[in-house]
Each structure stands twice: as C-alpha cells, then as structure tokens.
Image 1 (cartoon, rainbow, N blue to C red):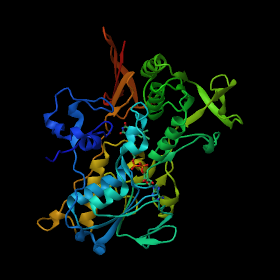
Image 2: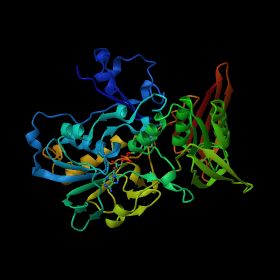
Image 3: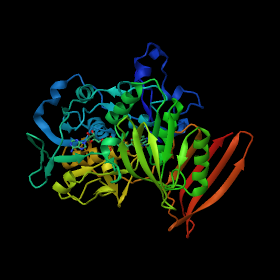
Image 4: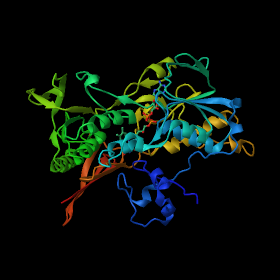
Length: 465
Ligand SMILES: Cc1cc2nc3c(=O)[nH]c(=O)nc-3n(C[C@H](O)[C@H](O)[C@H](O)COP(=O)(O)OP(=O)(O)OC[C@H]3O[C@@H](n4cnc5c(N)ncnc54)[C@H](O)[C@@H]3O)c2cc1C
C-alpha cells in the first residue's frame, strides 16, 4: 500500500518516518487519515490539524527520460529548500534536466531533528532519510556533491566550480545561511549545529566519553534553547548564556521569556542572562575558559567548560549573490519578489534560509513547499514546459507569504506563536489576553496589536506543574 506522507507545518516532521517504513512493523503503518484524533507531532507536539499531505519526487521506471537532453535548471544547495525545488519540478515534469550542486554530500535529512536528536539517542546516520545519491536516482537528476560553487556569471548564465563551469537557463539559489559567530569568539574553539555535519562532530565528541560534560550554549534563541534542554536531558550540565535577560528575548516580551527561563532553570539549566562572551581560550589541559561580561555592570568573570556551542544567529555568505550582482543583504539574505521568488535577476530564483521577502527572512521549513512549487511552476512556464501551457494560457499563481506557526520543541514548557512576533513594540504592543493558573499548570496567552487594532502576532506559553 502507498502511504501518503504528511508534514507537520510547525517543524516539518514527516509521518510516517523512514524508520517506520523500514521497520519490521511497517505493515502496521496506516494512512494519516486513519490515525487517532489525538495524534500529535512526535517532534514538536502540535496536533493532527497542523499536518498537510506532501508529494515527494517519485521514482520512474523510464530513467532514459533523464538523459542530458534538457539540462537547463541548476539548483545550488541540497538542504530542505533545494530538495523541495527538485520535488516540485518533478511533480510537474519528469523530463526537464536538473543539476543539483551541493558543497556537502546532499543527504536528505530533516534539519529540525538536530535540536531534539541527543535525547532521542540518534546519530547523524540515523537522521538521514536518503543519501544524496539515492535521492538523486529516485528523482532522476544530476547531482554534484562536495562541489562548491565559487561564482555566478549571470551575464553568460554560468556557474563556476573549482575546475568546471556549468551553463544554466534558470538558476535556483538554495544556499542556506551560515552561523554568525561573534567576532570575540574564535570559530575553531566552538561547535555549532546548523547542519548535520556540525551535529555529527559534537555528537562524536560527546559519545567518546561516558562522563557528563559541562557545555556552554551561547545564544538563547529558539535553537539554543532547544539544544540546551536536549543536552540536559542526556545528563550534561548546560550553561545557557545570552546578552538579554530572558530566553527568546528578541521574539517575545519579558513576561513570556520569564516563564521560559523558569522552566529551563527547573530542568537544571544554568541560565545566564545579561551575559556577553568576550573571549574564549583553549586550556592546555582540555576544555575552554570563557571571559563573560555582565552587560549592565561591565563586570567580568571567567567560566570553564568542556565544550562550547554557539547559536547566535545566521548570516548569508556574500560571494555568490555579489558575483551575480543580486540585491542582497548579509543578515537578511538575497531579496526576492514575493509573487515569483525571482531575485533582481529574472533568471535566478532564491529559496529557504538564504532569501528574504520585503527585507524579512523566514527561516522555517513550513513555507518551503509552497515556495518550491511557485518556483517550479514559474520556471517551467518560462521554459515553455509547464504542463498546462499546451491546453490553455498559463497564468502564474502568485506566491503569498504567510508567516508559519512557530513551535518550540522543548518539553519542559510549551511555546507556540503565530504571525510575526517581535519583542520590539515600536509598531505593535503586546497585550495579555489571559493568565490562567490551573491544577495542572499555567497558561499565558498574549497578542501583539498595532495602534489601529490589528493583531500581528499571538503567543501562548504553557507550563506544567
Ligand atoms: C537545530 C535546528 C533546528 C531547527 N528547528 C526548526 C523547527 O522546529 N521548525 C522550523 O520551521 N525550522 C527549524 N529550523 C530551521 C530550518 O531547519 C531551516 O530553515 C531549513 O532547514 C533551511 O534549509 P535550506 O535548504 O534553506 O538551508 P541549508 O539546510 O543550510 O542548505 C544549504 C545547502 O546549500 C549548500 N551550499 C551553500 N553554499 C554553497 C555553494 N557555494 N556551493 C554549493 N553548495 C552550497 C550547502 O552545502 C547545503 O547543501 C531549525 C534549524 C536548526 C539548525
């Protein structure tokens, strides 16, 4: 029986998992519609109504179709964004030539799993759904792995690799974003979990010893807060440092941040707010000494830890957008038009962590499928290959961006938000809608409202006693 996969709109987790399908019990895997009403996402916990069906690229018996006759679309980047574009094009056209180029090995994995993987005792290998090669064969595309695109010659529609050049008719940039490590910290001394290799490195380092370690996580945004709890659950001592007083302080007001902070402290996490890391020195005996400054008093103290993990935000590498002369900003990424996801060069599209719409990035998985489908439709129409073009005048359905539901994967506290929440109250103020103490716990419901009364965001924080 073919099981239609469904994707969680909050974190992108997919039902059924590959291990469900591979396991001896795979016969017990049922269609999503047959699951009980109280089914919830096993990664972030949202309910059944937050799932949508997905259609991944399907294998074709006729691999002859994929001979290099129409190699016209080049995609740079094989994260969730790049592979979503492959899926979306193949859903419409099984013949058009696609070359996917990735600086890594292009394995398909679900990145949000990385901040919940320690406590689930998963290694990097466990997280890979398909190797790059398997996925490329399945979709009938050319794949260049461990190949970094060094420059884009947009005048001649070519991408330049180390020892080769490749022509494109349409180019999709899905190059992601890289960790923005503060200049006071030497990148050699710290780990990050922004991709599976990063996760693999720290997972290997921690699994080499049976002893619990003292780990500093720098940055208490969503990812840092999730990773801090995940590492604590497997027995490590975690200090979570942030320049702000509370976790998630750039997104939520202090009343919500305080609730999250209390839940983290109750888990045993040493939350060090108001703390700026001004230096990291590797110790000759192993481990590191951090110089931490109190942001209010400027007082300085030293903190010794075994490992340091940074989660201090993302930036987009400038080499490719600059070489292609695209409208670009290092923090927000490559500017695209909302309706088509074309960059300032109409033959080049951008998707995922590397792009921004109206100057605002959206680094979440939920919008990727709709964005990929817009790009696929638009590119195929431009190449005269859209299936509907033969029968009728093709009309492009404009992409309309909707901020996705945000859900923290922490288990000690449930935090969800909709809209575009920000702690900056310049344009919209946070209002308390309810603050309820029950027998089982506590629930805060907040709304961010403009002076004209428009609700631009909501946040719900639930803690269990
Ligand atoms: C730990 C963690 C937890 C998260 N949890 C959630 C969550 O719960 N919910 C949610 O919605 N989002 C979550 N996110 C965010 C989400 O995972 C990302 O928004 C999404 O995966 C980004 O995908 P991407 O394909 O744009 O980028 P990436 O995954 O970074 O892929 C970029 C690709 O580009 C390639 N590349 C880059 N430069 C070049 C070059 N010059 N030449 C060739 N290839 C290149 C790379 O090798 C890579 O293959 C989480 C992120 C992290 C790190």
